Length: 557
Image (cartoon, rainbow, N blue to C red; front, top):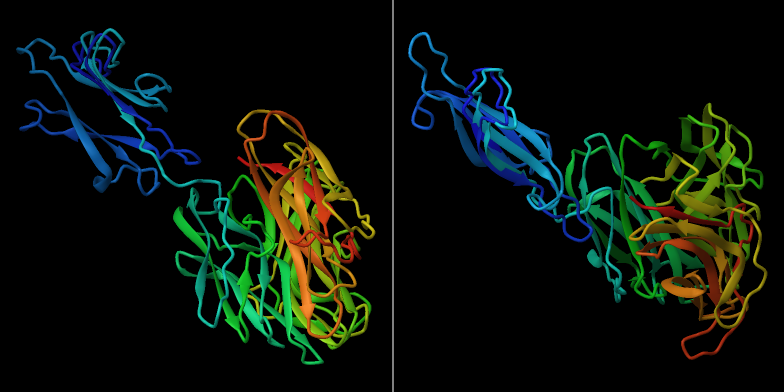
């Protein structure tokens, strides 16, 4: 901050008039934080105790509510730049001036800020020239301890332990500082969920709360079999939710859970890498979405359009990609053993490769309502208005249903540039895989990391069945980078008291990978049927009745 007398009475604080310099610097943001802006306000100061002949009150402080205005309660420092004594009649008095210069990162302000320069306008040109500056002060922004744009829970999430009929938090929590009043926050969950152990017809809720209250991100899972057998199913769990537009500010998101009949368990099979990710979709992003659509069923073997789940979107460029996300709850083959069905996202009423199947065989009739996420990439879509909708087919003739006992479904369409990311979206089944950790055919993609310090988000969306012909055995899949395990793992464990198991379910694994070295890296999905004691049983299978086996690497801001 510069102060001085406007010696030349030109209304500008020139360099020669500056008599005081103070620095207002932007303070460092802590690891994985973003700095909060400091602001400066100039108020006219009437003649009085602070300035005998009047002048300017230069006020500075932190924009703590991020509204772009230095409010009165945010003022932390006030400096007075006073006018000089008026000269004798016939002479011009000299005016003090203030000039605000941007201060780059450096010795005065490690992370940048504003240099406020003051001085006397000796030459009366109303400009504070450099030679008139007598004082410089620096105003620096304070640190914001919370992330902007995106945030994820730390590595090392814990298994929940047994959850009863009381709502409890389960150690997955993030804070995100929202920077725009017009943006939405996208919440992505990648976890494992078991409900109703040893209880036929048990169910449980998985809920993401915002600031301790419901935010429309609740999903219920349910298992039942016609024979009345006890059961134990640990299944990959995923959800994607979108908040309403919210005022900018700090928001907390946390996972809570509840069990109805039997106990629930969250996180087993994830190796402590369960993910809760919050991302701000601001005005720079091109997207459209629908959260409309109630619980609806069909027994038709032909595809039937589901209510609500429809988005109209105008694509702006033919060279960009459409990223499509469907989050819903699916039941197929009601009271059948080996019931199956197919969910598809259509484009302008035409079938696409964005579809997934689900199959449940457990030795007797069943009823499995499972929340799921399907992520697809549609390239080569023309730059015009398009409509996307959802269909469901009950392929085996048993009743199939979408949307049971959840806050709402989500159909999200994002137009993304074909740069800064890599993906493979072929649709090839893996065949039967068994034994120690090994790569799953075609599910790999190279990606070039341009600079150090990059964090990438990896999305793997497919169908997965573990340990065919077995009962009560784990099968796993994991993200590998350059043939090395990342620990970003999920698995399936299926048991009931009467029969071997065969469950092909949609799976959507999301991984956050920080600090990769610059250069090319290979991202791949590997699989194993090895149990904790080293023994194996049956085989895993990927890609049954699946249009895309998507593996996508995106660089986060």
